[in-house]
Structure formats: structure tokens, C-alpha cells
Image (cartoon, rainbow, N blue to C red; front, top):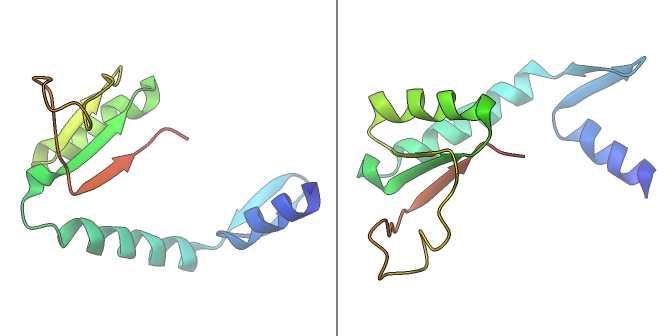
Length: 102
């Protein structure tokens, strides 16, 4: 099972591994970035894009992304029921979720 997990990680965008250092395939990474940009740009109303991060290193990125794009940012603790509980005042029904936490 460990061999399979390592093999999937290598094919997901890592070109090679040398001495526990991953060599990233820049072409595949660029293609995935372009695909993500097309998906985000295809949403008509930017407020329907919800960007979420609860970790400290992702909160600043979420806020900086949401400001010029007009997306909805949730930085910090994610309130339960935000997408499911319609009675809640913070209820949202986004068309696209972008989550930064692994």
C-alpha cells in the first residue's frame, strides 16, 4: 500500500524524487492552475465562490484572494451549518468551494 501511495504522489505533479527531494513538473502544475482559473472564471457571480481556510498560513491568502475577486472569504474557524442550516444567519449557498487546508 505504501508503494501505491508514493506512486500516486509522483504522478500527481511531482516529476522525480531524489534523496527525499521532490522535483515538481512545472508544466503539469501550470496546466492545473489554468484549469482552476477557468473554473473560477466560469462562475457568473463572484460572490458565489466561497474560499475557506482555518489554518493560520492560509487565512491571509484567502483574504487577499477574496478582496479583488469579490469572492466570499471564511478565514478562521468554520462555523458548522454554514452550508446546510438555512435558519442560520451566516447561511451561504455557494456554487464553488475553494478550500486551502489539507
